[in-house]
Length: 233
Ligand code: SAM
Image 1 (cartoon, protein in one colour):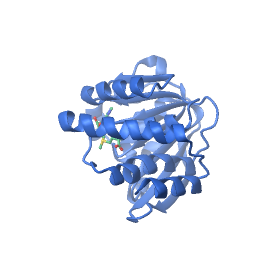
Image 2 (cartoon, protein in one colour; image 1 turned 90 degrees about the vertical axis):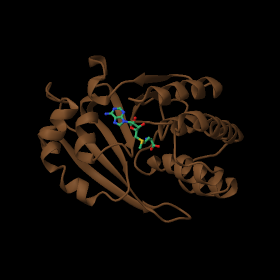
Image 3 (cartoon, protein in one colour; image 1 turned 90 degrees about the horizontal axis):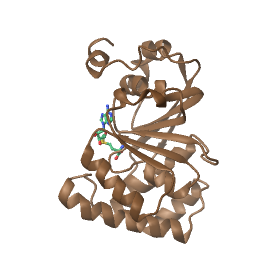
Image 4 (tube, rainbow, N blue to C red; image 1 turned 30 degrees about the horizontal axis):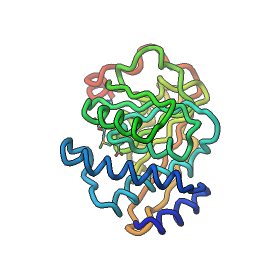
């Protein structure tokens, strides 16, 4: 996706694209390419692919949720910053927490935050199932792209949402995962309120945004350890 098409498609999402946004993205892209040589951060390497599969794709979250105001957003398994950093560039009022278990990715994100002069961003190098207690019932929105099956992601995310908060799971096809998540959704007192399906421009691959609402405070036993999540579905 070239820059002109990127602007056109992002504007179709009702997002205004400023010169400052584009300058930040260009700097981010250069850092990604530079650090990828040392740290193997992403398989997506060309400029056009980065603009489509990382930058544009991250912004599609807006189809599910309007991010205006100083909402608290957690990005679980953010990797090289997707979708979290891209959302922060366009919605600077977000109070953003980026979480990843891989310390090289967190080190890269700290460079990006400094170089792009992003404020009110916290990076945490931890597994989601061992986030500090202070984050329980804390976030308005949790998101996650390409990290885990929905059934697992629900347990890793719902405990950290406020009652009434939302998980926006960024998925390819999601029907099977939704079917396999019924039991855990009930245990976590949460409901899927909508699934927004669309195709990525240009190459047409399937995307879905699964929107889950937390209805009650989460029982203390969740999240269980990763072994238990995997064994005892
Ligand atoms: N969200 C990014 C994206 O879409 O480009 C990265 C996706 S990458 C395939 C998955 C990331 O999730 C990796 O960086 C990995 O370290 C992280 N991850 C996997 N399980 C995790 C867990 N339980 N807690 C925190 N991070 C996790």
